[in-house]
Length: 160
Image (tube, rainbow, N blue to C red):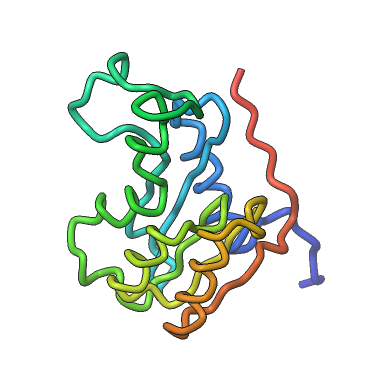
């Protein structure tokens, strides 16, 4: 049989695609982030997106970048944190890979370290010069967690 070129996607493209699709669930008008956690057998363990905590009326909370209680940063759960919390069995996260559309902040890095995730594959690091991202990278490095920028093909997800 001839070696046929296919348009199949590789595992990185597949899992980053799931993270990107998950990000579309976010109601954040500025930054939509998605995450996908997979185990050593390439099985999806959990997914998440950035959003408000469950059972809270989002109409009573701010999606603004405002000041004080009008700041979304006080309320929003990040995609990585949600993916960790959405896992039915926390011990299932040990040695998993986290695919995320935006490099994790310092708070999410703490959770990633605590549950034993071994690698983070990120699509974008647009806040790399901010203190919380620098702290995040430092903690993840010290914990021996592999950090890898996604290098696969560009993924376009169009919802009509």
